[in-house]
Image (tube, rainbow, N blue to C red; front, side, top):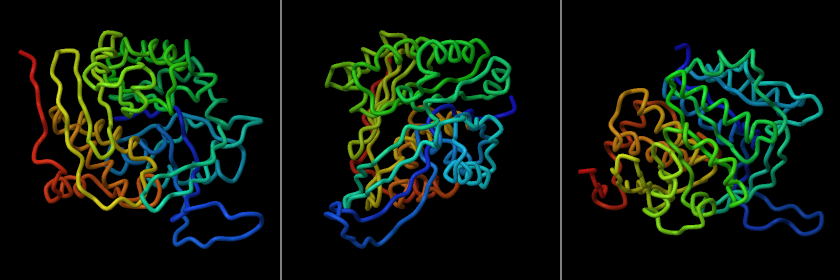
Length: 323
């Protein structure tokens, strides 16, 4: 296959400031310490981290004919990402966010949906889009033209061709369940946050959530849980919780997306499930040490070194194996 990773969906231009504790009243100005820009989104940030780890990456999404779109393409190209499947969407601006990062790393944002809701994959482009070891859809719930039947057909075709398929969502709500459920039978790894999984399923316990999604047809669900680490629940009955790494958090923007890319990199490199999740956790932790998506992520050797020298928040993962 031509690519290791085809990252489809939500690409956004982010402008981030830190620390932000309040919005100035009236026309006043508050001063901040740092301002930066980043390519973010459930497909965009994952694409960049995967490229930093040495994977060959195809970006598939939409941009507008504006300065933000030009910068997104330039930035993706800086990391060697193939942007030939990034569509210019007439009449739509590039999906963009103003991110107000709090001192504790939380990041309330103002977001314009833009071209993420306007792009679509033509039949003539399917061969190229699916010419990858891993096909990732990131941002289900935001892709107006691709959500539903087009995504269902795309994921089914990816599985027919023997691709590994991964799925992430955006700020899921119960109303998004139909979009997600139609993808699950052809999804190998569903990787939401636990908050998104709870909202979609209506359940609270991670084991119950895992069973709920496996019963809907997914091969495995991996839930990111912030400071509580990540939970892996496979249809073969194996499950485990991996602890988070102890770090000083700067910004949590893009942490879940970095996890997606780290986990996918582990799959490409033939790692076992525990090591794939551990690499995902390390990628998320490194992401959080800088301002903006991927800021703290450098390359694959640095991620392995981080794993070797950084203590998790608890002594060891809790693992349950299928009998």
